Length: 111
Image (cartoon, rainbow, N blue to C red; front, side):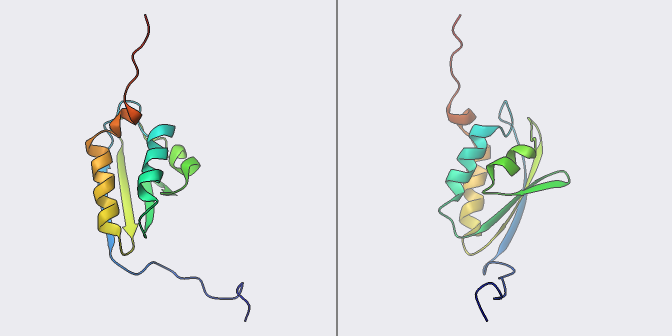
């Protein structure tokens, strides 16, 4: 059997956690918060799925995350599977609690 015929794993070993959080950063889940989410989750050995309404995206797919069109006050559901699910969920919770640092801090508007 060659490697193309090898069965694919159906899931990662470890717990599966799910949580819904309300997005409170001003401009929603735009490019910067999406990039920050991906960057913060990259070190963890787990699989993240992000859903808004009936749409979902892998947590490491910036275009998929942007297509969720999660605006201010959106309910964002996370499903995390893998041995480091709890640590990844804690990072996600911190990002939401800090409103993603308002996507790297707000910039003053020049008048």
